[in-house]
Image (cartoon, rainbow, N blue to C red; front, side):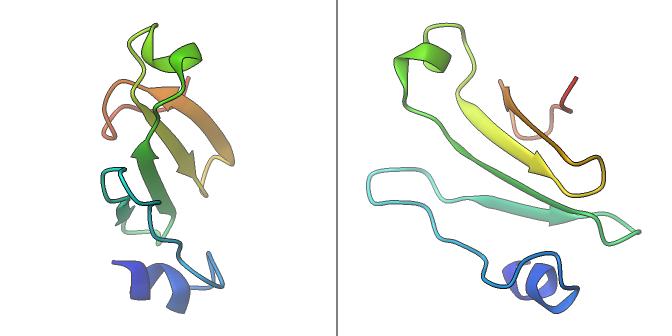
Length: 73
């Protein structure tokens, strides 16, 4: 999925998660909008139940979510 996101021009380089973090989840939809979701460890978010950070190229939104499948508000 990382290669597809790069080939569609959504990202120049698809990043890897830092050591000690869960791997990033890369997805695209039929319109080739890219979505990247990664683990969050900051207490600011984890204490509120949000343990993932999501970016969506189609909507231009980024937000804290409980699960990577959750949409940004």
